[in-house]
Length: 360
Image 1 (cartoon, rainbow, N blue to C red):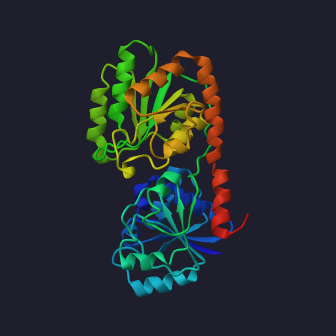
Image 2: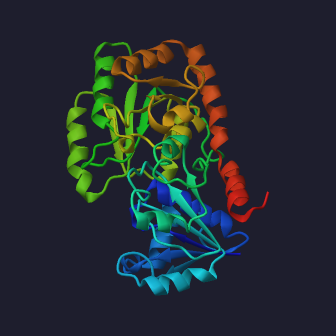
Image 3: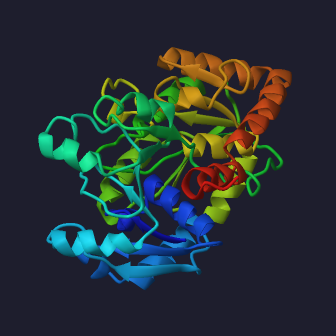
């Protein structure tokens, strides 16, 4: 089987890229897989980019080919139509834009709520007819897209390396993982620092510390420095660009996991579309105390494998409840670890093979 995979944002190293590259790894075991590069991506060095992505996500792409393809901005439509005819399967991680595909089976992948297109135009409806089905990463994403993308769909939750993340000797750590994106500030780090300050100053969480982990680019330095200033005098540690191995250790050592993306927001796009880091933390026996919005509600069984909160008072109350009751924490830690197994890479692989190659 000959398979083509394309994302226009491979150079962003995001969750969507991790998702489809894991698909590429899985499918390349028994099929010929081409990872497509448009003009923009190709100028950045296809093989070098593939190598960096493989290292960043701990994914084996050695059997995946890189190919410069007539796709993306400035490409020739006729050339593209002819190009894709040689493929049995085409998988496209769309950012909302689509084209008419010509592979034998054409699959869209949608990672986040994309509202208002393509079904609102005649041309968009025509292009959409060429696609067989959509793979969504969560029910939350599907619910906020299906009206505008009215074709067959399936939900396949993102893969999590639950076999590599295990509980270690626990410390009095509260952990939160999310990019330090200075422009959007969508992970709400300031909110978490404020909540921790309130708890710390109340003297109810002595010897506990807050640990904020996330990737950061050169343009995010100002935001990281702002967070450090907010944390002065508090046991708060900030880790920009922590290695994956160190992050795995942090998951295993931490006792509570906080997440606040979507707090104070109404737009679906500003909420967590799934919540891979929450699952990773749970796999390490870290009890999640996360906002009850977006895809988080599909991960955490409220009151059993963690807590879902909607106000900062609830975040603090639930955290104190776990900190003050070790038996409750132990039970929830066990349940969190068990729950995380539902999102393992093995289950992801089974569903990908079943839906893309029609093999069970």
